[in-house]
Structures are given as C-alpha cells and as structure tokens.
Image (tube, rainbow, N blue to C red; front, side, top):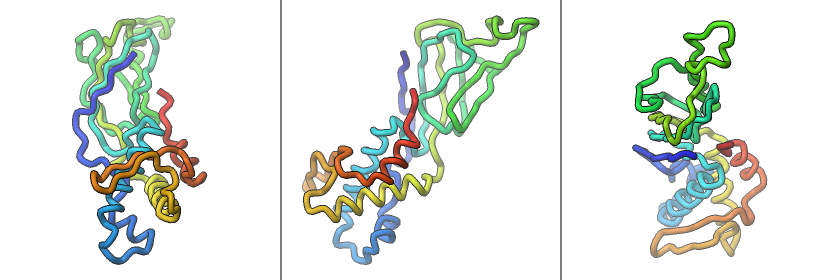
Length: 196
C-alpha cells in the first residue's frame, strides 16, 4: 500500500493557450475562455488516464516495504530525490533510475550473498519507506502537447463535443471520457501510463 501526497505543483495544464491557438490557427481572442476550459479539461483527462501528473511536481510518497531490492515510485521521470527515510532513519545509500522512476538500494555491507543482505533490500513494514522527490517534466513533451491539441481540435469539430461527459461554460468546467478521442492521441497517452 502507498500514500502519495502532492507537496507543490506550480502549473497544472499540459499546454498553453497560445500554443493551442497557433496549432488551431486561431488569431482572435473570442474563444479564449472556452479554450482555457478545454485545455484544463483535456489536461485532467490525460492525467487521470495515465495516473501521472506529467508536469513538474514535488511529492511525498509513503510505501510499504516488501523486502525488495528496488521500489517503483508512482510518478516519473524522477528529477530529484530530496530525502529517503526507512523506518524513520535517513538513507543515503541508494541509486535512482530517473527515467523509469525506480529507486534501488546500494549494495554495500554485503559479502558472498549480496541479494540476502538486509542492507541490499528495503525492509518489510507498513508505509515504513518515505520518499520526498520531484518528478515530471520541466518542459512538457511535444507528443503530449500534440495529444492535447488534437483532442481539443476533435472536440471543437464535433457539434456534440466528442469525448465530453460534462460541459459547463458558465462554471468553466468540463469532464472528458475516452469517447471519440483520436486514436493517435490515445496511443500517445497510453505511452505515459503508470504501471504502479
């Protein structure tokens, strides 16, 4: 079991209004409010589908130790690890596989059977491993931005707002479902899906 807390997140949307307007060839500000709502709705949809925040975010994650050599964090890629505590003690002997979001114990203090050494594994316990780290992308990958743009374009082209479960311009809120999301955009989104 794990508990993931977002400590700080400076931005939430996966693209900007100006980039969406450039992609769609919109030169006026008449639709800015609607586009802003669509950007947030599509960004939230993608985050929910991938179980990833994607934007640079600081986390505090508490994980059950299972006597494994490594643990997979819920968010990736890892930008930095601020602290790692095991059973309330600061740990400094670990290695980070940033791209895949994995933290592995360093193999120190072992002899003939390194895989049996307690120093080589994360000990068993209920949320006894606490990691404070920063993960996500400082610059949102272009393929994810393009997925946002394509979904917005598809939504605007459909008179029924394809892919929308809920839409309210007055309250500026929308909720997306898979619906008629373009298949290329959905393929891109699935490439970022978390395995945790």
